[in-house]
Length: 45
Image 1 (cartoon, rainbow, N blue to C red):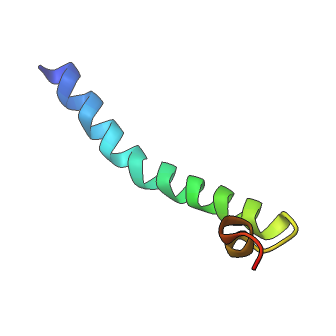
Image 2 (spheres, rainbow, N blue to C red):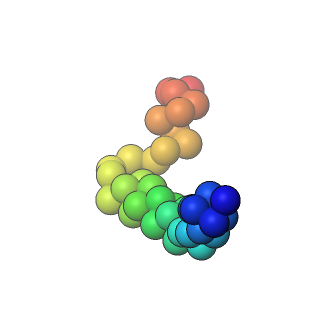
């Protein structure tokens, strides 16, 4: 059971870092790409 406990603890420690990295990557992609994401999802008037 020590192996499972260690695995869960490591995953719980790494999860916030992974979420922060993913949010940063998505934010940077949306900032670099041309155009407005809202306008692209809604479509033309």
